[in-house]
Amino acid sequence: MSGHSHWATIKHKKGAIDAKRGKLFSKLSRAIIIAARHGGGDPEMNLKLRYAIDKARQVSMPKDNIERAIKRGTGELEGQTLEEILYEGYGPGGVAIMVEVLTDNRNRTASEIRKIFERSGGKMGSAGCVGYLFERKGIFSIDMKSTDEDTLMTLALDAGADDLKRSGHTYDVTCDPSAFSHVQEAI
Picture 1 (cartoon, rainbow, N blue to C red):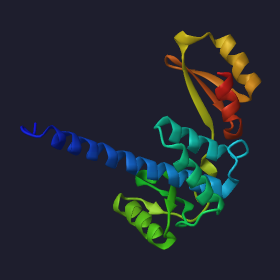
Picture 2: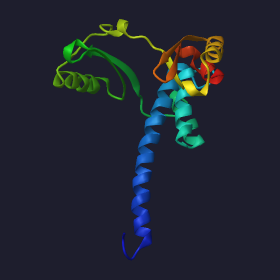
Picture 3: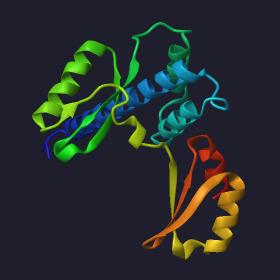
Picture 4: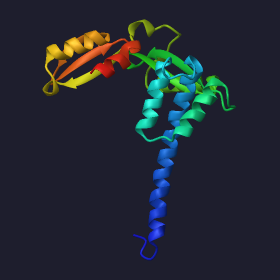
């Protein structure tokens, strides 16, 4: 407690909260910029952009900030250029690792990632060295108590899901990333 000034206490708490929110908003706006640059500014046609906008809305990011980020990504507004780069390598014990990075300086980032790999006992590899081991999938985990398996199987497969498996106390529904939104709406 500040003792004599109630505003001083509020000011310090509000400052800390605003700093966290600003950091999160800038991270989310960078994701929106990259998604808009790669797939266009229409969320209906660009799945990655739709996910980035949904994440921003979940944390109450203002609508004008979202629209400004989309315009930067499509080139309507000037701003810094960010790139999305994929690095591959091997960790300790030969574990395959893929790292997706969003950067404004490709050279600096490559040396930083290489340093992290080497410091932890791994080795950065060339493009494609471990990529064939990974596969992009959308996964939903649904509590077994909320539905029965037959109903969920029918809904998920009709929406475009690939598989339904039991995993402990949940059903895990897997799908292709392009069918993610359809399966999400059906479930």
